[in-house]
Length: 381
Image 1 (tube, rainbow, N blue to C red):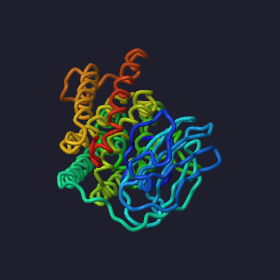
Image 2 (image 1 turned 180 degrees about the vertical axis):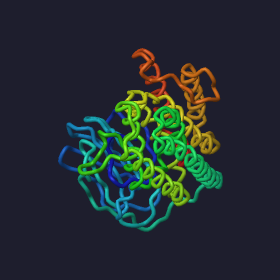
Image 3 (image 1 turned 120 degrees about the vertical axis):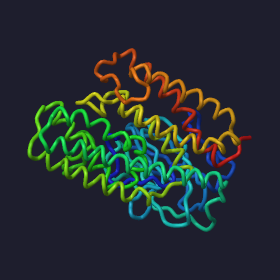
């Protein structure tokens, strides 16, 4: 769970590409009509064009402000078509997405707070490029995987909620981390229903103004920091199941594309880098490595489904991804005695040196993973 986000999120067609360190020239890709330059500052969100052909579109983003920013392409109802987070001052990023003809909004979000500075845009004519049938099969398989994860989460969450409602502190602690694995594996899809994620997975520092704190992390605080279960906690346990059931019922309706799968994999690595490695996500229970492993598994699932096409378009990238996934999984195995279990070392027992090693492993995978979206939509030269 990211600390701050728009109140409405959806996984529609996101694909983070590699960050660039040199100047971004207009029309830097082969088709300048499909490149939109976005210049973000602390007070402006400037775009190079307000109309562009439907299909594969690239945002070339530069943050000229003093604050970390995010850039979104939104549907009229604020669902997200594509997003790129954590764009530091003075840095540049590229994002690619599949968009259909219609009206959209580009929003820059300096400080990663609020609704952002917005520009209305339109995708005209054209259509999304015809895909390789293998990519359609990959999307279908990933949708099935996401549903399976949601279906498996509910019984585990109910066990957790039942322990909370029974006032059994130790049983609730034991059931907490397992109840989150399916969610963490498919978090980009879970976040596609923006009204659910802020209810079930928000941390205290991610609350919007006036938002009531509910969900897993609110209960985590009661169990580990407060060391007591209150009447309100029992009500919150029921609410958690209601919200997760809503998620389970809606997973099959998520809008998933090959590029959103690729970006979702990268997003999961970003989740690890910004929340799990730092220890911020599970700050009371210190079960961060369980979430860490689940995020990596979810990213690897997307990659495995897209790999046949990616290998054809960019064999070197696939070789590097295979290497880095294996290295990170091997590193995580150091923190559990049984490679088939999710009984990981408590993260407060992991020293700074080991955390740095984990961070380096995440970064080594995240960089090539950021190129996966391009590898499933374009041929390498």
